[in-house]
Amino acid sequence: MKPILQHLVEMTGHRDHLRLEVSVLSTLQKLSGIKAVRALELFTDKGVAHVRPRTWVEEGQLVSTDSEAAADPRRELLEQYAELCECVKNQGDSALAHRPGRHTLWLPVWMHEKVSTCLEVTQSRPFSAHKLEVIKGVFLVYQNYQNLLDYSERDALTGLFNRKTFDEQFSRNAASGLSSSRPQGAEALVNEEVTTDSEPAQNWLAVVDIDHFKLVNDRFGHLYGDEVLILIANILRSSFRSHDRIFRFGGEEFVVLLRNITLARAHKVFNRFRETVQEYDFPQVGRVTVSLGFVGTSRGSPVEILGQADQALYYAKEHGRNQVCFYEDLVAAGHLATKVANDDVELF
Ligand SMILES: Nc1nc2c(ncn2[C@@H]2O[C@H](COP(=O)(O)OP(=O)(O)OP(=O)(O)O)[C@@H](O)[C@H]2O)c(=O)[nH]1
Image 1 (spheres, rainbow, N blue to C red):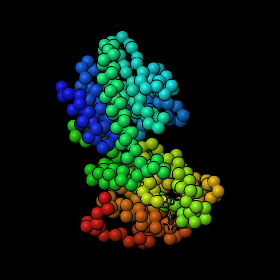
Image 2: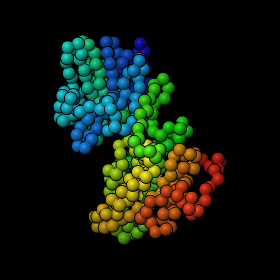
Image 3: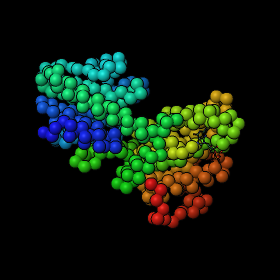
């Protein structure tokens, strides 16, 4: 076995949450006497706390899923994990369960007083004090590193993912034909997207821009402008599912990556978000609206996809604002010309 320090070095070499998760589990799995390791995802569905395995060992290999948690058939109620449930309620840092021949340790990963991930380590004998100390040491390095990674990926004002994260995730995933961050190399990833509609589901990229935001700053000052940005970020967070991705792209511009839904639903979801903003009473400022342009992500390079969503957004801006425009509709109607790809342009 490699010295534990070597594992820690490898673990902290990752710049991706899921790979880091796989790496910490692989480190823990190699400790003597460990029977099983898993990373559990904790989430609420209709107000009820659930848990589902996100990374686990299958035929000796660590595999992960990035499917939507709420639709995962492996999901269970958190209350079925009595000790873990109690620990989460008390914001505890670990929980132990002893069953005949099966001793389980849970280590919730706390971030900003919230927990969405928990490591689970199982062995047949009770954990010795020394073993617990080693596991918790590895876990703390992992948790600190997860927090650092998270901090570097986010925009300080809104807490959304920043432009750098978009560039890294979107260009990488588009290059590999995939749609979200996932580990590569020896570890496999189980992809279990399902759709019940007859129309094919796919991924969509939208660029969202606040209308006349300069006026908000000019009339009410930058502090109120900042508050509008924070509140719109909150509306964005509550308008999309947990496995969609939202980025603050620049000043008053946001990007949404909507995963695995039909065109009709994408229209619906984007318009619902636009209407929520339109109806929101922003303190002091009153009413604010947003424009949105979107396009499918299955064709074209990241630069082209982003450019097309931008073209649709600017069409929305030039034709009345406070609306959602779909790039392909605009092209089909002759409102936009498709741009010839310019491979020399490198935005990422
Ligand atoms: N308060 C605040 N304002 C910002 C921030 N980043 C960019 N802005 C402002 O956002 C405004 C963007 O204005 P414009 O690009 O002219 O567009 P607009 O007024 O929104 O008009 P349209 O997009 O055409 O509807 C500028 O006034 C920027 O100063 C920020 O972090 N906080």
